[in-house]
Structures are given as structure tokens and as C-alpha cells.
Amino acid sequence: EVQLVESGGGWVQPGGSLRLSCSASGFYFSGFEMNWFRQSPGGGLEWISYITSNSLTVHYADSVKGRFTVSRDNARNSLFLQMNSLRVEDTALYFCARDPPFGGSDYWGQGTLVSVSS
Amino acid sequence: DIHMTQSPSSLSASVGDRVTITCRATGDIGNYLNWYQQKAGKAPQLLIYTASNLQSGVPSRFSGSGSGTDFTLTISSLHLEDFATYYCQQSYSFPLTFGLGTRVEI
Image 1 (cartoon, each protein chain N blue to C red):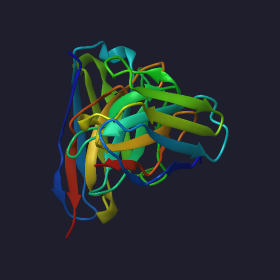
Image 2: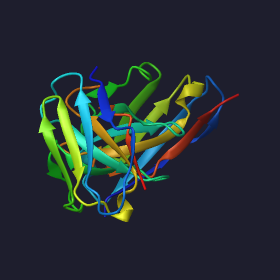
Image 3: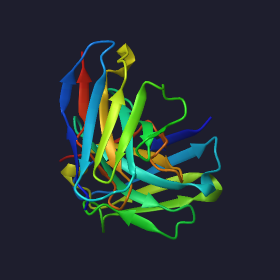
């Protein structure tokens, strides 16, 4: 069974940092591209980052570029999101998701909540 | 960036109704259009990928069509468990972008 489990969320003051993790199981993690998405309270879905299976290519939304860094450790079946210089508007539920070659994101984690406030 | 416009933003329907949701892109995205269903407190679930392909395990009452800039999600006969919010997403180019969602209510 494919499973994605996010962790690392929590409360942080503006300007602070958090590192999110996404632990994958039930599939060949090394063979898949991965995405991070987020959803603010009561809001819609926002894509924030993408990484290829070999980590050679990454993409970021403009809203997080220069502040967030995506990485992965295929040996540990894990995806990461380092979030620095956090802002109030980064408050959201953060999801990792698997990106199959045929399109869309077919498996999502349950999300981890990030709350940025003073 | 490609902007996605969904309509309607919400609709009221009854069990058994046929429901249609539309999504329009600001540029040609070919068939790189995906549809998701999201229920309160849950992660989105992929329903349709590349415009018209039914994701494994999704009931056949869901279907998608369209190409280029105009796309449609149809639920042929609404079931109780279909009351949720639906999002379209383009995966043609980065940044990946979503529509604002369509809430399907009783």
C-alpha cells in the first residue's frame, strides 16, 4: 500500500524556520518525481515545489523561491522541505504528493500543519 | 503563468443529478489537465488525469473531457459521497496551478 506521511509542522514566529519531512512507503520512491503543495485555512490548493527522482531538477513557486528548499534522500525514502524566513502567509496545511509519469498527483499524504504567527 | 478559472464556484444538487463543472485555462495546455476531489479535512484525491483518463479506483460516473483551454468534469449521477469540493489543475508547465474550486452541496 502506497503511503506518504508528513511530519515536522508546528508553530513558529515570523522569520523562523521549519523542516518538513515526508516519509514514503509501499512503492519505489527512487523512481518518482515528487511535489509539495499547501492549503491555507479555508483556502484553495497551491503548488509550491517539485523535485525529480534524481534531484537534478527542482522548481518552486514564486511565493517561496529563495526561502524554501526541496530535497530528497532516496536511500531513506524521504522527501524534505526546508522552510526559512517564514511569513504569516505561509500558514497552511502542507502536503507531499507523488507525481506519476502519466499526469496528476496520484497519492497524497495527510498533511502537516504549519502556523506562523507572533 | 497559466491561470485556471473554474465555474461555478459552488452548486446545489440532489442525489441522482447530472453535474458539470468547467475549467478554462489562460493558455493552451493540450490535455495536461487533472481533476481532484477534496472532502473536508482530507487530502485531495485524483479523479481524472490528462483531461479524460479515469484514475484507478474512481467510479465510472466521473468523466472528463476537453483539450486546449476548455475542460469539463461530469458526474453522471450524483451519489451522496460525491458532495465535496472539486479542483482542476494544469500540469502543462510550472508553476502548476489550480482553479479556485467548485463546492458541490446538497
